[in-house]
Image 1 (tube, rainbow, N blue to C red):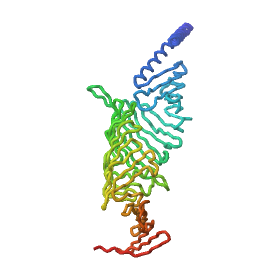
Image 2: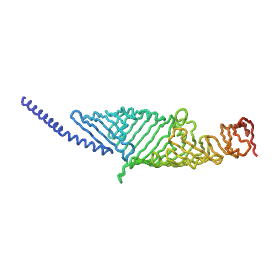
Image 3: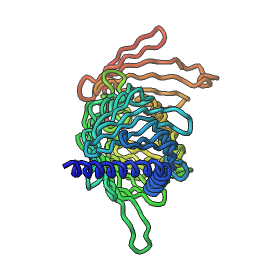
Image 4: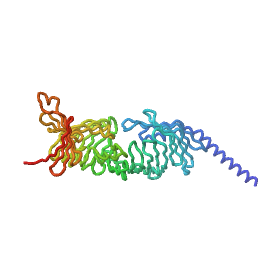
Amino acid sequence: MNWFSDRKRQKSLVFLLLIFGLITFAYARRETFLQQAKKLIKQNLEKSFPCDLSIGKIKAGLFYGVVLEDLEIGFPQEGRCGPAFNIKIDRAFVDYNLWRNVFTTRGALLNKSNGRGELVFALQGGRIYFADSRPLLKNLQGQVVLSQKGLIFEDIEAAFKEGLPNVLKLYGEFSENRLTLSANLEPSKVGNFDVLTNLVLTLDKKVNLHDKTQKICGTLKTYGSVLNKRPFPEVNSSFEIQDAKLRLLTFTLGDSYDLRGILSLSRPFDVDLSLNFYQAAPSELISRFAWAAQGEPGFAEQPHFSGLINGLIKIAGDIKRPRVEGYLEAREGRIGDLSFVSADINIKGRYPRIMIVDSRICREEDFFIVEGEMDFANLERQDFLDIRLKSDKGMLWQGWDITRRPENQVHISKSIADDLKVTFDSFMEDANEGFEGNYTNELGLEYKIFGDKLLKLRLRKAEGILGLERKVRF
């Protein structure tokens, strides 16, 4: 019996010595193993993503798992659209019991170009938390689940600071060759605009089997869009990304606006775009952008322009100040107080100031030559559109008909209502030189009684004349 017990003790001692030897060997080889693991992590991440990875320290033990310290992931700007970023992670801990889904890390997202825009985050148990982030977020949380399909975003919710969307909710999946993302923007105050919309974005990676070139094909759609408490046309777009260029196959806003062309995603960020108008009503669109002088934003009672438009506008050059050129055709509309049968408008210039040239507006009785400019830097202001109308007979100035008559007389009139008109007659400075006639400024009021009879009131200096006029045709 004692022999059996001694034999059992010997086996236990040998087993313990073996374990101790393995632990000693593992501890002795730990640095080599950790350096190999560090190299493997760096190679795989840089191979999967166009980034630079730096790992300060890596630690491992029997009881506290694997710890990564002072990680830095850099995304260079060259050849890309947008600023360069650094992701700095202070400490990442991975438990050996991976089935417990324990993963904790803390760090910050920094703008490498100017050092601003720090985004402090924490990730624990599959949930993301943000705090003390500037300048955009108040809070961001949700779940990111790793599955056989890839990453699944569940109930990602971002709360923004003042001046940006209140709450943005995200759902979607990200796999090796496909991204599907749905976003819900709850009613928010973005600048001066009240915004509500839902969007769906899909991205697919395509590989040409012949030359092995790759491109990203995508679609973007919105639904349920509301701007300034009124329904807003939906966006429907399909596009491709290849060789640092975004090709818009179509980008429609409702049924009336269609934008197509190419945008460079690397410097100098040139564009070559064409915007088509199909029976478009720009007054309905612009009225949502806070043109109203009173009341809630977007409820302009009388836009500067009304009518349906067809046309084409081409935009090319540097995206900050592109060249703009095109034409617009309108039928049966109104500009200010002027109604027209047809309008043919030609525009050219460099954004944001666009000139109106060689344009004409036709009415039933006459036509006008159109000149002016649009300053899109003042889009929210009522004076962003400055139009001047001229003809051989006169000029229309904010609803007043101005004509020149014989003897250098200037006649100004405006219809207050269908049966009421105000007139004013004046004379040029040299009109009364060498003449003894009565050349005095005169203010008049004409009221249509019935038929062809007018009641007229004339005021001239201290005189006042009231008369009844009847027009007779011969």
